[in-house]
Image (tube, rainbow, N blue to C red; front, side):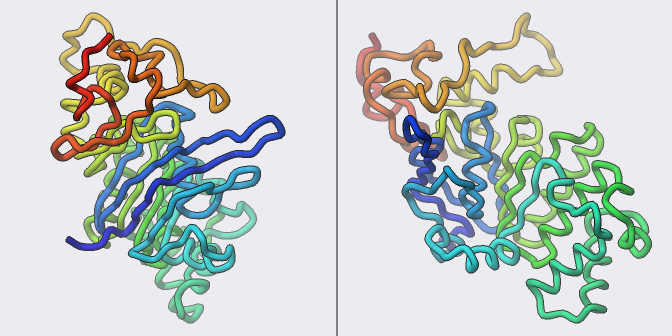
Length: 328
């Protein structure tokens, strides 16, 4: 079995406040293989984006990685000095943010930003770097790249700006790309084009992709596997079709049941009662137990650990040895 591009083991991220220490990520573990797209989905506040930021070392104070290990192609990176991690972040790990304007400097031409990034991470001359920048713009679908390379960010539409950000992310041929809500601010037709582009990255370049989103349609169309997060933990992880068509965790069932179908045979969509708990008020035991119709005594006192269920892992006392217990 080949070594995964990204391996996260028992990751914990905390935010220290004057009153207490809040744990935003609590024991998250997953792998992403070469050329694989892992979708990470969940409600706002589930910890999706924080997980991605932890991988690339962009957790701002008062946040900190409090435990666990992060490996990139077998090399541990969570304990590297900031300067060394910065070099890895641009060359071996690419990042696509939700708002492309946060990644692009409005005062510089697109070409200048691409060329600077390419020259920082690759040993190329100015001419060679500019040619590579034009080739990258063409690859991500920018029309007339020889002319558009000298335009400023405000001269591009939202979808075109996101394509430029993707070109920036892949300019040094990274092993891993973390895409944080890359289609949220775009209309549906442009979303489909960006999704197709991200899928092609994995297929043509062998790039591993961690796709963070709350949109199950994007996950279904793009991902090979999906991790469903809730309150800083992974509730269920497995092949995307298995999780979508037959979810195991009660929270995953609620998420999938809330997706409307073209058949429209249901009178009402499934609704999950309540809301995601605040970091300062995470319940004892399973964090989902106050909202779960299947919760029993053990759920309220003991935190479930991920258990293998065929091709999946699910953190729920209804499965494994716990399934023999009688629900109260």
